[in-house]
Length: 171
Image (cartoon, rainbow, N blue to C red):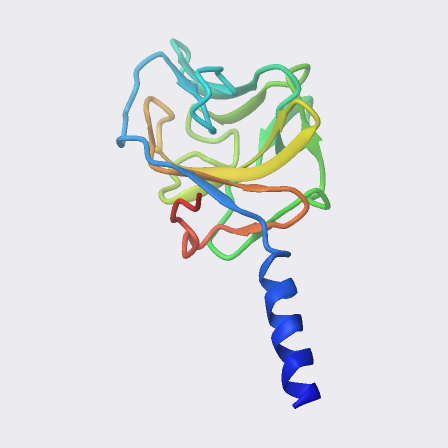
């Protein structure tokens, strides 16, 4: 009987350790200029995804928010992640508003050129809380347009897999 009680207590406490997922269901969009991305529906723009006239798609974090990527040849490049990649603080490098990222430029610069159903790793800072999430995108092979699909976030310190299996809203 005592072992059954211990198992029940462990189950109850373990279920409280998981972070909540906040799922923001946005309609698929193919903007032609700038898309203001608000990950947590608080009416504050967290990221600007911008297309400009020289066939370039940019990720511009706002405030203290950041994206994950690397720095190659003088250009900040956000990763185009496949499904089942964990998004957490230990990802290679996070770049904030001081370092906007080139997702795709022309037909050859950036990890996003011609990619479909790839994930942009995002770090959202709200007050003293840090959240990790992603936005799923498609970018054309000429970098002349992009489509934003869905954007769930997960509360720190847990992580979210990009497979979308946890893409539900928890209250």
